[in-house]
Image 1: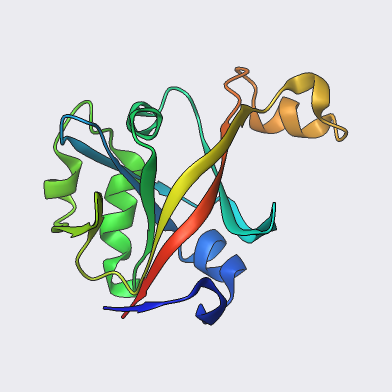
Image 2 (image 1 turned 120 degrees about the vertical axis):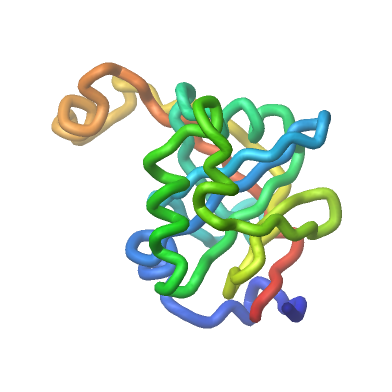
Length: 166
């Protein structure tokens, strides 16, 4: 892996996030790690910083980990690792060791974790968090369709601190 700047990221981020998926991985202060597959998010510029934004429902086990950590990783994998991402999206770390079940091997990036085999890794630092609210939707079909049980995502806006590319 080599370090690059956020401006050097190659590829279509709509495809990377929406189609290829990513793992959001965070470590608690006690050293425990959890990850989840995500296909919602984005990257851009805000507050004169290179940022990403990700969405995590409060009932996801990874939410506890992102709350405990100041930094976490977003990592992207080649198609041959799709099954591992599927496992991490369908299983909860509360119920099993899904990292082992997915065949993932942890790797360190400063004080964060990602997994071997990644083609792109972003180490990010939390800047802002808010929860989506039904009353703020302009398109009223979205909350009724996507949130029938009112389990609205938390949105994290994070500064992209470091990027590794294979």
